[in-house]
Length: 65
Image (cartoon, rainbow, N blue to C red; front, side, top):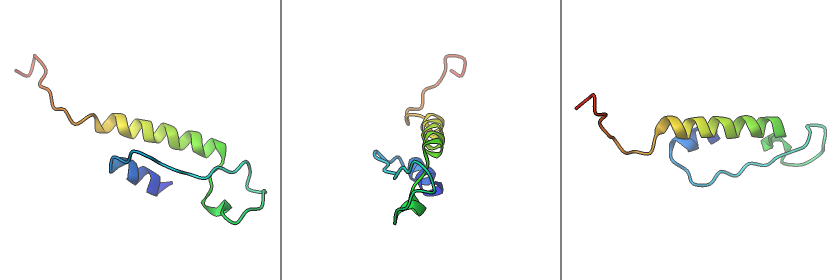
């Protein structure tokens, strides 16, 4: 998950993650997969990070002028 968060700060335009319905399901890539709850957490964190970083435009407020 940390790599996904870091990638967000680098202004990625696409994030791909594997989703698994449960850890008991067999699969060779289940170690790199996240469950639906983890996916929701990832999306919330990515959206918060994007909002915190802003759009890059620096605008002075009327009170600052």
